Length: 316
Image (tube, rainbow, N blue to C red):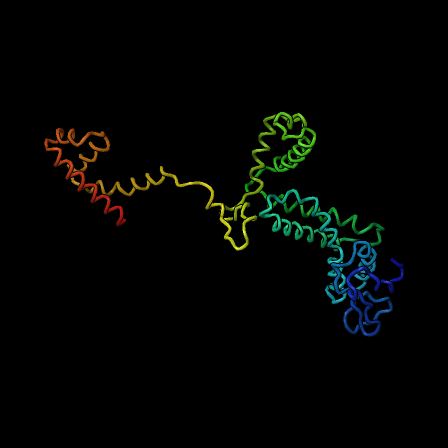
């Protein structure tokens, strides 16, 4: 790019996205009605479309102007916002190295948006702290700030349960070790192989692998991943609809819990019949002998008892 600031009108963005600012009563970087003897900032309509090479050169001009205008003025706000938009390519560059941490495809898009937002915070901090007089390229300062904020995002928000810091760091080492060993072995490594690679005890590796299970969780109401390939317009099934089954033991417990008060209200003979039939598992004939009544009477009494209990259950 030519060294003259006037040549900034040739920035490689959409046609017409960069225009020289008004040389008269105002410019894009100075408040309306304020005159300046310096070359005005270019008016960049689509700063996010500026190429990285042009952004590097334009940033020098904008940083210089950022120091000249009062903080909070329209000129300061324009210069700062334009610097953020022009250098978003640094955030996208840093975010690509964290793509493997976004998990499954079902949440990768939303997770990447969170990563970009965290990286943008780092970019803003770098812009506010950058000193052009030190002779250092802005990207040299910005990238550590951006990656630092992204790492802080993962450390503070992605762990579903509270895990000690050493285990959080161990999870990263384990992930790298598994990738390296899988590439060299052509298969998934064993715990012993990972422990040897990292020079750790197998117990420490197992503890790290168990802790890694708390890195992220997904609600059972989320759509199943396989539904992403389903036909258009077809309803996506939640994981809760395809995972697990009814617990019969729980259903039995609920029924017995509801029956308890009803059984207590039965006459003593009825409770005895229920106990002999279902507790002792006696036949009707054996119950009749025990109570001194006929089998037919036991059958009628038992049918009546069960009918009343069933009606009480349905009513409750």
